Amino acid sequence: MEGIVQIAGIRSPEEARMILGAGADWLGFPLRLEHHVEDLPDKEVAALIASVGIGDRAVLITYLERAADILALAGELGCRRVQLHGDIAAEETRRLRETGAGLFLIKSLIVRPGDPDELLGRIREFAPLVDAFITDTWDPRTGARGATGKTHDWDASRRIVEESARPVILAGGLTPENVARAIERVRPAGVDAHTGVEAPDGMKDPALVGAFVGEARRAFALLKGNPFGR
Image (tube, rainbow, N blue to C red; front, side):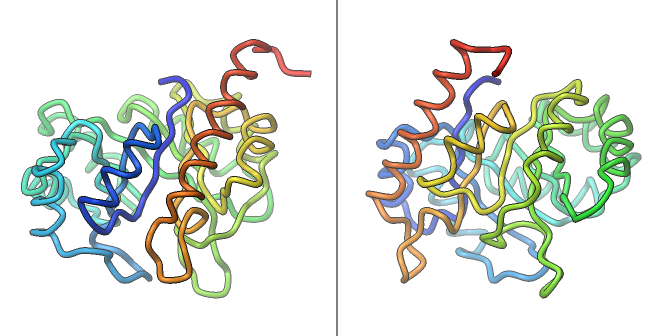
């Protein structure tokens, strides 16, 4: 993984094609959520993934915690990548790894104010079981873990990047205006945007998507040319 750009919260095949045309790598589909309303029901997501032909580029984002449930939903969708946002236990993750027939697993790390040592412990626990991590933001007002539209302490995510044996994707309040600074500061393997590229009606704004992808690509290119930072 190097310089991955993910856009989450896809609502239609037309939107998916627009985002892919703008140069995004992965498209995220949130299902079985804690605090948010799903953008589309399961069957429509499955039909979208099949019609656009993006099984290997679609990411199931879910708070499910049982391996059997996650595996069944990923199979129903025809999705090869799964982002685990819930409180899934290490043993269930191991079971998913062993029975998931090659699923690419991404474990969320929710950054809260304070000492990140707890997250570093989770990295050590889950690194042998997943392919990547994603850092995201906790909203203390709602309790939401992700899709908050809020940034978090990028220094905490930078430390996670430095300590992790697996690639780390950065999410949480990223927009075309701040994604380049975020990449320079955190040095992640990828970035994810959801609400930061949406119009007021909740649909993805082509201009914002294009700007986000362009700014991310530019920042990743600079990072590659200067791998040791400032």
